[in-house]
Amino acid sequence: MLDLKLVQKQPEVLAKALRDRRSKLTIDEFQELDGRRRKLIAEVETLKGQRNKASQEVAKLKKEGADASALLQELGKLSDRIKACDAETVEAKAKVEEWMMGVPNIPDASVPVGKDETENVEIARWGSPREFEDEPLAHWEVGQKLDGALDFERAARLAGSRFVVSFGWAARLDRALANFFLDQHTLKDGYIEVNPPFIVNSATMTGTGQLPKFEEDLFRLREQDYYLIPTAEVPLTNLHAGEVLDEADLPRGYTAATPCFRSEAGSAGKDTRGLIRMHQFIKVEMVRFAHPDDSFNQLEILTGHARALLEALELPYRQIVLCTGDMGFGAVKTYDLEVWLPSQKTYREISSCSNCGDFQARRANIRFKPKGGKSQYVHTLNGSGLPTGRTIAAILENGQQKDGSVVLPKVLVPYMGGVEVLEPTGRQF
Image 1 (cartoon, rainbow, N blue to C red):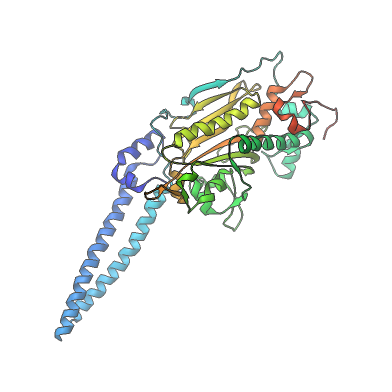
Image 2: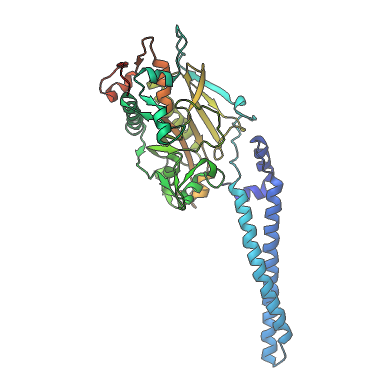
């Protein structure tokens, strides 16, 4: 959520941000709602002043033994009007807050202005895509040759489309990746590992910005105030909701490997095959709490942690900065890392690393106490480090061999019990 005073005093800043983000919201809507709120507050103050004056007059008349019935009648009318205005003011404040909850964050000045993903800006590449003698197979085809370990048909019978059952090597590779990522983040990068709830309430979803705007993207438990988490960012960021951290505790980083659940509303027809866009998947998440003066530096550090994973896995990737029209709702700046998928002959998103400024901290009321100063909102950052499903897709496609085997990245061999190459056995799971 944005600072209300900023929107009131510098409406032109938000107006530009909304235009740059291609938002349907307009500053005129806010000014109309906030104008009514202010008018009602002023009216209530005026009426209360009149009531106080009338009360003093009544007291004076009673003291003098004079008839105060007319003034008492006026007092009753004033009280009724004040009560009605108070109710209208509460409603007006709620409408302003509701509008504010739907307003996206203001992009940083360094973010390129653009209409959509076609205007994102590439800023770095690592690794060279491998050249294949034959046309490379898609990862689900590679998985089928490897004893059918990625089983989408059985998953469809169990749950529906956009699910997978992983057998044997595929299940172990999923686990190996999560363990490797967590080891890197905790032993090398200094994150604290957390095992959070996978179900959270609406207040927690609101804190990170999933609610109220993106409810259709979530899975909600029927007749309960519970949602399945779409990412561990939600519980990790809200760990300190309503708390005041010590300045010395910043920056602070958390990481978690959790299942993630997404309805994928609005993605009909996109990535209907394979592991790219699933309703359920495992992802290792990184979350950082930073001092406002240090948050953009922390964004570079966090993104570097995700880049290091891809480089350790020897997977070619590129880094892009998202333009204003493609940025996430709560971000002030976002880097996407896109891994090379040979079958598609393109780079596909595998990690998104964002600085959210104080946007989430205002919603969740997360502050820090500087020495000798008033408490301030922290800045929150989050990034994927990494989703195991998309990583498996990239490993299978980039490591596939003509005989149907797949060469695994060297760093995963210890996590795979010494297995260096996945080879088909001729049996189907």
